[in-house]
Length: 253
Image (cartoon, rainbow, N blue to C red):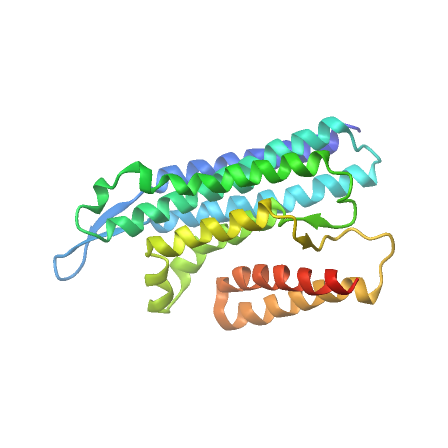
């Protein structure tokens, strides 16, 4: 019984590995449009990486829930959870950013031959995530709240962009996702939030009250409404709302 939560954690890691495979197999594709012009594109199949990261997040939630339910929490489980998280929500999202950076440079002349140095910032994300997880593991003050954005939230934020890219009818958004400076900004933004000590909300309470649940209700309502209005952009919108409401409600608690 004590190993059941660890099986969930390993399942999280398994889906993280599948996400990385989906990203690597997608690569970049060269197509020709109706006018005979060559186009460089990320194959739509990369969306499977987003799906696998999403499944990993669901499993990650349940491993902790099952551990508390069975009273099977352990130091090994805590360390294993961090190892799985850095792959599923650090390395895999970093690879997504890497591929979008490749796509961004491919829009330029001789862009397919871009130096790897311009793509390496993508891997700041798993590094920041690993640092955040290590700090969490030795911090005894995060029982009912987080310091810095948790890595699963950061991973889901990035994992949403392939879905946004392939399901958006807004040309401005598509062009933005083909801009390398947008992705450099995302790297800085998400890495800073993870390594920071900003107070972040967590679904951990000594007692459940309307006041404590209010920010999560607001995030859920905003995400649902956004999903109807802007599709997969609801995920990044929900993430930004989570960060803002964390700062607001932590200041008043």
